[in-house]
Image (tube, rainbow over all chains, first blue to last red; front, side, top):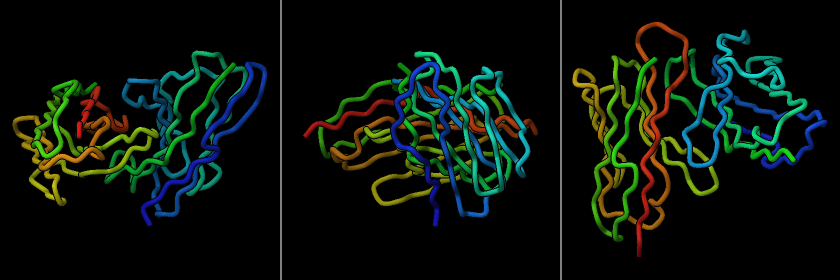
Length: 113
Length: 111
């Protein structure tokens, strides 16, 4: 089963709200990723977890807070976002850090009002 | 970091035509993937191809790692092939930097 599941698929939030994006995989992968994609642009890496430890934080603002409760789950906590944070947020997983085929979820489309 | 260039940026073809998409990268890689992003935003895996040649139906891909490029071939195009095709690479330098995406080729197949 090569599937990464993301919820919610759509999210609208105000700048003072706190919300979370969730991601789950059951492929036994040990690396999980959050990417951000703006319209007509390629995905950009935000965070990488390897064996449930944060490996990379690509200088992402602190209003985005990742969490990896276990090897199958990845969350992205959102707080005090700005309208320019509106984007498609993509979760992905791979067998190891930067190793093997990367599989993406369907994405969570976020709109910040 | 590694640079990825895709060409052409845009391509409009009639149904039934063949096409070749190119991906050039600036350094040695241990991971190269081709994705198709559909209109709903989902990234669909086409090929995991850090080297060599693979075929899957009407699609095939070739990566020549020593010359730092990869090609994606689409034959007998269908309207459902429309979308954005991304090449993404991971460097072999040992850095933990995930996959770097090219800017993509926007393909439109007209009936």
